[in-house]
Amino acid sequence: MSGEPTTHTPAAPGAGAKPAFYATGRGRGGWRDWLSLLHPPYTAWHLSYVAIGAALAHPLHFDRLGYTLLAFFLGLGIGAHALDEMKGSPLHTGIRRWQLLTAAVVSIAGAALIGWFVGGLRLVPFIAVGAVLAFGYNLEWFGGTLHNAVGLAFAWGAFPVLTSYFVQNWTISLAAVIAAFAAFSVTLAQRALSTPARWLRRSVRHAELTATLPDGATTQLSSSELLKPLESALKAISWGMVALAIALVLARR
Image (tube, rainbow, N blue to C red):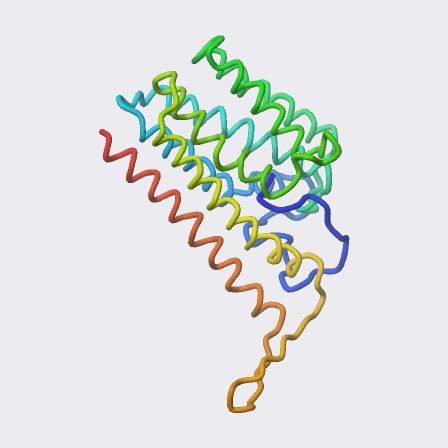
């Protein structure tokens, strides 16, 4: 669940020599592959929504925030990404299928246990929704109904904000709903950037865009030049969202 579709066309390296700008793996199933599996910038980006949701609540319980961050790291950062790699192998890791399945089940179960420990019955609806989103989106259950831009934006954008806010005071406010919509919208923007970036990096061997200027002159852009602004925007937004989340939490101390 990296913010991109899971299906891909096996092909020679396209505009980028790596399947993702953050990929460090070598396709041998080692620790570098496991690190790549986390999709670090995207995981940090969407964990920032957890922090933002909590920071809106009064009072802010830092222990509950810590548990919520851990639960989402397990459920989405590890579990959903392991399922994503099982389904389409977008990162071309050498991690075996049984290892991915084990990591997914254990991490998502761990997230559910943390939720039960923190909120008990009050969090059961959120735990259930989270599990359905993790498995349903990445494995394309229900005929792929959840596997689209809206499903991604809710699962990785709105849902973390609403859950984290609810954990803080066991209610949902208008502010939380508005913040969830903001996260939903930003995640849609992520999808709009990451989808063509993924296509250029993984599936396009070579491409050139010829642009004609007002004076009749022409200039050419290669596939790598087309890829660069897309990934630069993704990097900037990811770290910007993390910085915003940290600032909001620190402001509540």
